[in-house]
Amino acid sequence: MRLSEIEPIAISGAGLSSLPLRRPLGVEAFGINAYSSVAAGGHVVEDHTEASLLHEEVYAVLAGHATFTLDGETLDAPSGTVVFIRDPDMKCSAVAAEAGTSVLAIGGKAGEAHTSSPWEWFFYAERFGPTADWDGAITHLQAGVERHPSNASMMYSPATSSGRQKTTTSRRSAGCPATRPRS
Image (cartoon, rainbow, N blue to C red; front, side, top):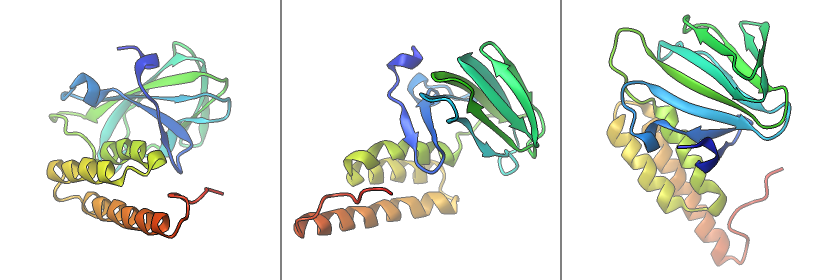
């Protein structure tokens, strides 16, 4: 599989595009996905810690040039750079220093079998938003609930999409566009 063959998913509020790899490849042993930015200054790793999941992470800059921020310290990362984060409490982010930057992310909890994270289901559901395909989003998120039945956010997400579906249907019946323009 080539990254160029993967339809990027724009992650609203995160300012980055996800290139899902784990699910299409069927990887179950560890988490693996890629992120890209078409413009310099765009995120290729969102600002986060792995404190809730206790994951160690490896980031590899596949193309372009990134600048990582690790607990407030910057790291210049041209193509070919590999960054390892052992401490799940370390705050991490990265932005593209040049257009076309892609970063591969691999992670998992040390000493345990991997289980997919709920965020993966949320990111993938973003794919349905631009076309207002709320049935698709709901079906996808309900499958996520089956995989993560004790996660409160997972339980809430299908209901949120259902609400969006009803709003879209109401707006269409009133002769309005299906979605509101984002400001």
